[in-house]
Amino acid sequence: MKIQFIGAVQSVTGSMHIVEVNGFRLLLECGLFQGRRQESYERNRNLPFDAGKIDAMVLSHAHIDHSGNIPNLVRAGFHDSIYATFATRDLCAAMLRDSAHIQEQDAAYLNKHRARQGLSPVKPIYTQADAAACLSSFVGLGYDRPHLIGPGITLRLCDAGHILGSALVVLDIEENGRKSRLMFSGDLGRKRLPILRDPELVENVDWLILESTYGNREHEPPEQATQTLRRVVTEAFRNGGKIIIPAFAVGRTQELVYDLNCLTEDRKIPRLPIFVDSPLAIDVTEVFRLHPECYDDEVARLIAETGRDDPFGFSQLCYVRRLEESKELNFLREPAIIISASGMCEAGRILHHLKNNIEDPRNTILITGWQAENTLGRRIVERQPQVKIFGEMYQLRAKVEVITGYSAHADHTELLDYVRTIKGDTLKQIYLVHGEPEASRALGQNLQEMGGFKVVVPAPLDTVEI
Image (tube, rainbow, N blue to C red; front, side, top):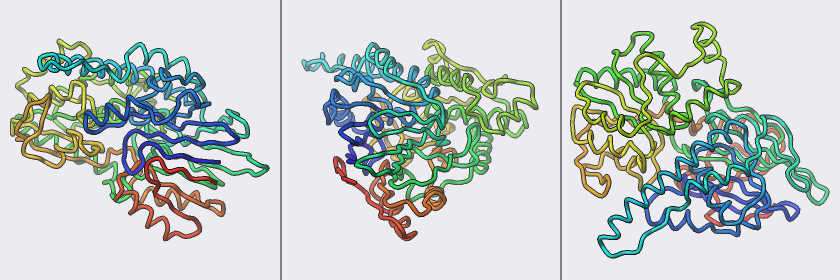
């Protein structure tokens, strides 16, 4: 068995790895790399392998940094099966087309400026037609349903507790008369988060590819995140300002809506208008409604006790789909909450809301998720005095608040606890991916202290043979 670590290696975007067993080449993930515009374009447009020589693909979950380059993969010559849970496939149907739409819009916007400068036009990484075409390659699997996907390779998807449909990828491998188990965490979730179940424990793992996004950081407890949200909303209301929340359309938006619903119903925050301004988030929320089998006991009890079958809708909440309605939000003068994508402030309607609100000190920008290096979201978290939006500089005068408790990634302690629980007597080696170098090294050091297995932080394009 060989493993090549291609993307999200000593970084947190563009997840992509190749496992080769018995001559069968299996691609784990095909995510978009996010960062500096030109670097991102080149890395995403040009795949670092021959797509036609990949025999199958497994997708752990639908976040764009894991799934977002699948249309390009298929266009480049991949014509085999993409295995994922049913919920992940449904989410990708919305998210990949939305990603293509944003790329087409960005390319059109850039080409207007390039035309004025006499430069040749750029093409989007892929189109909406490419996004629609790749969906026929998806093969839906239920949790804990073993499926033979290649010679000597049996796949089982276990609940990762990260976002709707997220999975731990478990590969039971028979090669040269030997049996072993390789597990890829995708993004490992947390315990006690709203809506979804806790991560499933997998036994008898020999080789583990583990994410390390928060390998050197701790989250505040989910309960504390709710209390911080309550404080931020109350303070902004008293200041007469708006709260602008960049949020991932999958998972984070639904968690925020769920908590705002509960806080409003319990009269713990003022009743003020709440807008979810993201066509993608609206589509994704519909997918959430279609998959109650993924809900945890808390949501099931809420539905049973209130008699409502929709935990994502309440009187103060307005879902905004039409562009004209989104533009009207610019004229709001009273306090309000606007939740919009993208979560790292790199594209979408959130850029317009930031442009129109970032220079008003009465307003609050609430960051609730991880911000990768060289993104606008990271620059806001760092409270840089000036930030660039649509090519123009704006003064960062709005208050910036950061809540870490909503993160759907396991933190340092939770990652250690998960490995401690599953390691047993079989675990031989851990490969740390999906983390910036400091995070991966810090987690690796603490894992190594457990003893009994080796920990490796691979470099981009490293190949290991087992």
